[in-house]
Image (cartoon, rainbow, N blue to C red; front, side, top):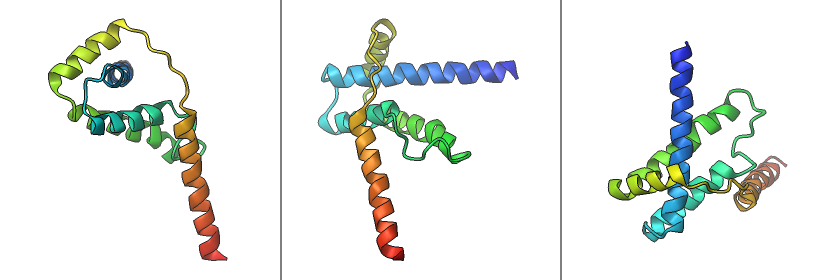
Length: 125
């Protein structure tokens, strides 16, 4: 059981490093515009104070963090050449990036929820 916990802990550390590497790839202008858009969505969602599926919803709230963020990171990494990603990972290992919250993406997620609530209210009234 301890081995499983250590593997999970290492996986989370790699995800955090890869998230920082993606930020560096975008800041250093090492990727095309469409990858930058996906990086903005990925990093913004990961740093957003508001989740698409709120954490207070049992099971689903946690799946949001355990599935959506890693999937976005994985898809984004697949669009970046291996050499570029390795270079960014090396930079991420030595560079400390600020971890500020992304209120813009949080606002977008709030907008999605408000839109869904308004649609549901109009449909059922």
